[in-house]
Image (cartoon, rainbow, N blue to C red; front, side, top):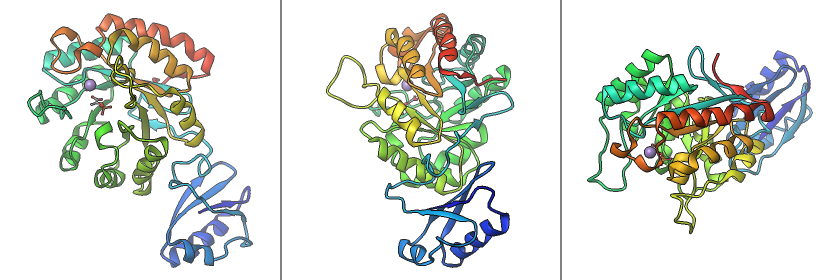
Length: 341
Ligand code: PEP
Ligand code: MN
């Protein structure tokens, strides 16, 4: 349920509604715009409805929400969420963030080289996997904590905030000690225990769409994180499973446009995992931005032929530089700006 307060409702009117809700054991999440406050209510439906909040001083409307998510919806918060990832880098509300780096962290030298190249080309966040979700248990699984240290050092050297995947909820605290943004991979999108934990942690979260997840399932998964009190969440469209095999996945750009309507959360596009093909990454990056995405996640490797993971979809640094040159002019078209100050 949403309680929409009248324009300029007083603090005591808002507090009165919140107190009534809390007295019956419901949670009240406030979305305060300059003029309007909206209260998202989570609790036993029947009890909450029996409060008859409609008609109380300052209450404009009580809306019953039939969707399985509330806090992530635009009805609850009409203004875009902006996620700040450090002193210079932000995503959302017109700020376009570009996360770039290798699929997996392989060595100190690899990370430093790629970090410098990504920053020089205009990336705003550095990526790298330390814990890798691999289809085969015999494939490279990542460097773990040693990798996190290498990524952190490369981030500090270049001033870029870092994003890396939390593969297992047991590693969440450790990863959070190093990373600025915690990635939930496609395979963990509906790991509800992990989403609960990340909702309680004070670190921004990047939630990737599951391989066969619907838009509603993605938003419902995001709701877990916001319900825990963490409002800093970025969604990522990374391609879904279809009958097509030429590309690794099918990039669902309509989902990007739909998500931008349905939610206030930033949405980014990962054309690397979506296509699995280096030659398609640049053009689909541009398509993502034109579709309304707030940013990109792109795999970049100094030597893709020898990459331990996802070489065929990784750009060489000079190719990433060209990608950025192709993206910048589009921002005039979309009214966005690079999320770096
Ligand atoms: C990744 O970003 O390296 C990754 C494994 O992505 P996804 O979870 O989207 O497959
Ligand atoms: Mn990868």
